[in-house]
Length: 126
Image 1 (tube, rainbow, N blue to C red):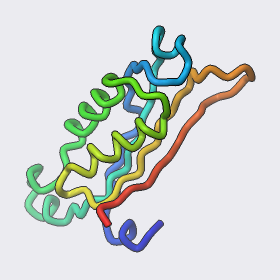
Image 2: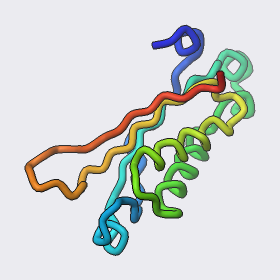
Image 3: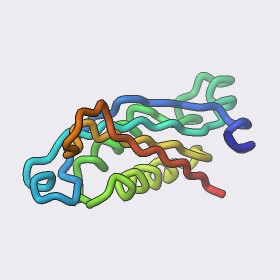
């Protein structure tokens, strides 16, 4: 955890599900699959809590809807690209100082038994 992460609160939404057509294989683009996204947002929540005011924090319901839309739009080859798209949209929220995004691809086309494929990225305004 960086110093910037320690000085902010963490707002986490886990398990945002969306159906996307991301991947390098033709079958992934044609058939699609479910993707699951976790986001952790670095937000200073003191102003919101002191006034009990939603306008002074990040509306996690809106963020979740935007993440779902990001998963379900514009197919890309790599989950790295999808994760960056999601990080950028989270950082577009004025109060978000940093973000951690994990994209899970539980139905990745792998020929061995596995539980999950996931990529986690960390991005900040700095």
